[in-house]
Image (cartoon, rainbow, N blue to C red):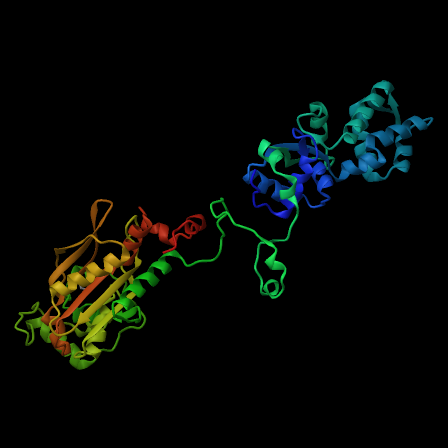
Length: 495
Ligand code: PHE
């Protein structure tokens, strides 16, 4: 038979087993002795390796063993308490309680009397007396013999004794252990002794090794990469963080720059700038987290004037606006941003004439009741493209490219409505045969761009990151992302 690529311990163990009759069942001690080893881990490891090669069979047995505990060891050495007291009683002409207390320490005299009473010793006028001395001697001898017979398999010991000693403190203990036996297989018997010479087997190449010549004649250990192995549990990114990194790298790759800005914003930039009417329901307290501190956010007077004109009558855009009267106080109210569009619009206000591609992946806040698909804090993937000639086709292509890079090639858009875009779109991705809505997009309206002096068309979108995470990770419940379930986290794919 061809020589399998064995490690030295495997060679030694197989050789030792071959030297005895082939049907022999080997236990740990006999292998340790035959191989001249002291470490049982080497036997287990080599046995496992030989088993993988089909050269030995390993029989594992799980055994419950009864062993002496600390008091039990003491009892084996010095005698059980009842045995010592009994011996003392028999050596005394008159065994009195007083005598007992002198002969034994308090912590032994008390429990000792209890044990003897159970065995049939009575106290009569301060004197200890036994009506059945032979029986007592016999029971005590049995108990001592039981302890002396340990360790033993739990199945083989006397159950009455086991019950008795289990009820006494620290005399015995039950230990679970695995017992292994090894037997040669026919293949193992057939390996030629020549192939079992121990050689220098190289498992790790090191620079030191390569400096010498030994490696030239050494054997190299081949690794079987198909064998089962434990997955190493090392630190890794949270799946949400990993997803954010992936989204980032896709946008960076597509030529976008990242924008990072504050959570705390004014209603003016979060809503007025985006032509969201001041009486829009989404602005209500029950939908938006308004802040008491700071009490207001100062806005540039000319910007507020421009919004006022737009909201009240459309300014110079040709729009009729929303009518009514615009409140500067409302626009100064601080809030936790409800969408990241608040940041892209400010970026545009600062760079109204430079073509740009900007994105952000960041946190937003809405007063949502927490359920399977909603969280009050979540992330949006936001982006804008501003350049001469930018159009709807370009917007759709950009979004499709993004999702294709994420691994979702099937994307469709549907008409939608946002106060700040025209046309407006909803983006849907096909997942497990169903269309799922992942975000909104559109081209900013003149009511948004003109007051800020923006001259080119602006394509804009905002998509939910957690929704995307649900697709990527196959989740039914969005809350799973944030409950820090370690077992679940360990089993997530590397994104
Ligand atoms: N801001 C929108 C939302 O929060 C998404 C969006 C962004 C829509 C940009 C159109 C343009 O859902």
